[in-house]
Image (tube, rainbow, N blue to C red; front, side, top):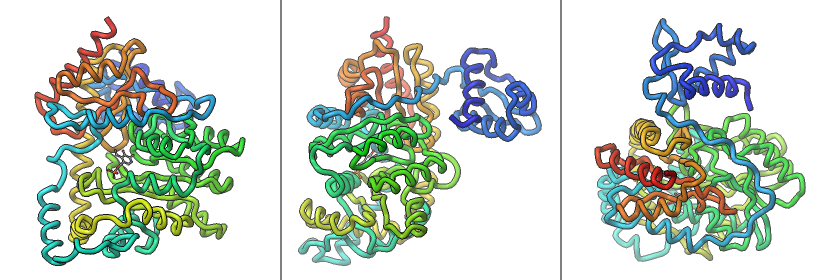
Length: 480
Ligand SMILES: Cc1ncc(COP(=O)(O)O)c(C=O)c1O
């Protein structure tokens, strides 16, 4: 663990113990540097991390103070361990049922679905662009689109990818029916039945569904709630030569919202490249960071190395517009690198082509140039909603609850005391028309029976606050 994180953890513990009470000044940079015998730069980085964690604030010319709300903020979950062995998968039916329940109509509060509420999406503008597209090209629905998708959309996607450091042309891209089809295509071309694929733990359940469908085993690797999959765990898993691929969400993962540091990104890409094990990078939440510049993709690090060693790409990068524009339009994409030919053939076998009108609407939206402003607004709103939800959880969930501090996106991972049963909590909440997502569907081996994932992308209101309070009360009633 980097030294500055140890320093930040040390001070965070003092805050949670009440030794550093809300509103008090924390020791100066110099004092902490002397007390812990570390450099001033390390302490500065640690204090910045504490700010990111929402625990301290800077008062100009005065110093760092413990935030008033910090006392209520529950601690973060610990890094998860690597599983002893790969798991056979057998949960597709359960995942399908829970995902369906999470988004059923008529819910008072859809904390279970990983989609932003309609208030955050430019739905009416996209509807207008859809009808404009079909007026402009009246026979667009009369024929199949080309397999890789509309060139004008692929050109726009290539432009967007520049912000993540990836250098792509329209020819490098294949448009897909959402990121989910891209995941399915990527896995289909790199694995065979009986193979083992390494995944984060917890991981996005959509990966598990595809792996099960392909009769592939999943190996859950150690994952840090802030930094994502642990590169040393990947190195260890690679050492026995059994991995067919690694699948990660490098930025603002589902469910933990981690952001992999650049040095880990480089290391991971280097190791997988050296072993010639393909890396599937899901960048679906990449635009939604709360602070700083947009993270660089793993793909961009791989491109750098490919230029040096001339051995071609090893990363299949994929994403979609579901989390920032409209999940129902089902427009995603993949940059399959050296697997392009196989991915195009799989796409042909899977769906012939993506629906054309929706591609045109998204291409027109991107060409009009409003995306950056829209995404900046989303980042601000989601950051605020995530912060409010953490405070609310701190007040109403059982003591001993831990919650992530996502660096972006809008999902929270909540780890409750061992005696809370996430499935029972899900059923009790659903009876009150509130959906949540139980933890075990994010694991290949049935871990996380006391965890849930919550979607914070719902506009704040008394109803939201009441609903989260009720979920907390239901969880507490299991611990009494
Ligand atoms: C990490 C991740 N990848 C992919 C998807 C699927 O996205 P799409 O709607 O574009 O198929 C999701 C949806 O929740 C997700 O969280």
